[in-house]
Image (cartoon, rainbow, N blue to C red; front, side, top):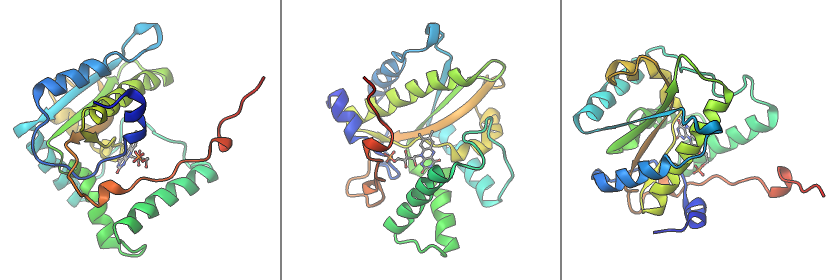
Length: 223
Ligand SMILES: Cc1cc2nc3c(=O)[nH]c(=O)nc-3n(C[C@H](O)[C@H](O)[C@H](O)COP(=O)(O)O)c2cc1C
């Protein structure tokens, strides 16, 4: 098992998985660790749904059908400012083009780019997916901060135990489909998906990891 610091440094987004299920006792351990997240006033405003087995295959089929039909959809919340500040946009483009280049997809190859996007709606072939949400009828900016800690705990606990995951906002465009598939979710605001499982050994796409900013760009000491 990796230490916390080792897991933080080892984690990367995994976009190709083995098909075998993460055992239930491991899932339990990971979810318990995620629930250790801090939250303002200990409100613990998160909801977490694990989808696997036949339910996941039904969901995957519907998500792929929606994507293939270019079905319109709308996420439950606005993730980022629109437009992005120039510097953020530059990093987003660099990362987007970076993964295309890594996969050998040309900038103008619309078909392969769409196939890349489609992988999201296949949940990258993961055998299990967590869906993180909160209460639709009552939330504010801080609620998302609290839920983010759960997301990070999930990813780091999985990494420390030899598994991998990829947070996904793109698929939240079909939050309405999630509510159709997942029981008792009428008052759930879906934040993101987290496909997870054993990373495919030797996977080329899983080797992609975009660079981080130098500390001097975002960290300063005042004394
Ligand atoms: C909330 C959130 C949503 C994301 N959504 C997607 C997504 O829909 N598809 C995808 O391939 N990656 C997605 N990512 C992964 C980011 O692209 C990735 O974290 C970033 O490029 C840094 O790479 P790393 O995770 O490998 O360190 C998301 C990440 C976060 C935190």
